[in-house]
Length: 386
Image (cartoon, rainbow, N blue to C red; front, side, top):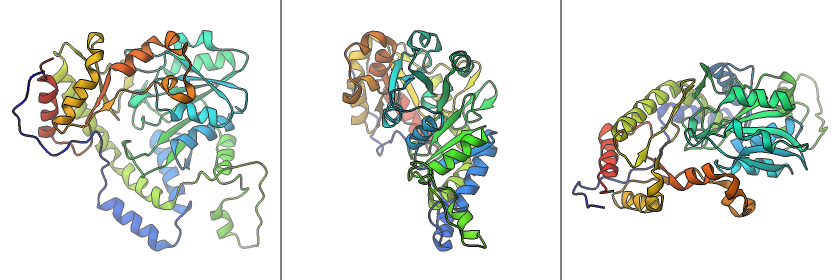
């Protein structure tokens, strides 16, 4: 690898949330209102989020992990059941299944999209299978039509882990108008729309929505807002075991401001992603993202993959970029290689997962990234002397 003479810039992060005066004012308004926890701003955020994705019901919660956990419970999944999911995902995907006493069964991916391959699902379905948890990996929608058909054929719940997928589109519809039972979003700072922490569940079913609203708040029979506005003394009941998975009004106020900016965020990310793709088109040792015709990527992350012959150089490439003040992250983790899920034979049945995890590099991409900064990343990566 050759040395570069270009002067070092300030450290370039992989991601950076875009927070402005609108979010600051919204938070201040909530702080002055005296209502800080789940309340009117959460309800407004839910309504506006549902309207954006085109869904009937949106339920705000504390994270996407808790969104997944509640969705699994609401779909009747529990101890001893099995749920099919990808290993190529953040560990929260599997943890949400394990947390309710069920067992994740890992399916391999399509190496072109990094999403779970529906053609590899059939042999994994057993008498204990109760659901499919499909992930829209780093913002690219999965093959939902085929997963819907599989779920319907076998009588399984279908839940979408849409943590990264806000603004992504499948067959012309935004992710979040669930093809299955529920879709779950993350508002972590690395996501396009952030509330600091937080999550959202969307569903078409009013009964599911009602139960999710109760479960997130200790299974309380009425909300704090309802109780607050009651003109008579009312006493709530608790008819099942619930959780404290609430979103605060402080977080929701940030989310409302971010939702107004979302179209601009998406346009900018897609523009920057296109610049990367065009710049790397003729770099023989890099594989750029593939986007099927029926999908529209939101580019929550931009991940390249080094050629198979270069996998042993992946970490060296990342280190060289870091020495030039360019932060990167490894490709998507393989959950089955982490200690809680480690079983030797998974490697044999998940070859594409292992390949993608070992070869991927996530490059810097964020709303306020300038073309000059991106050009520096491109120049550095393409001139490492590979």
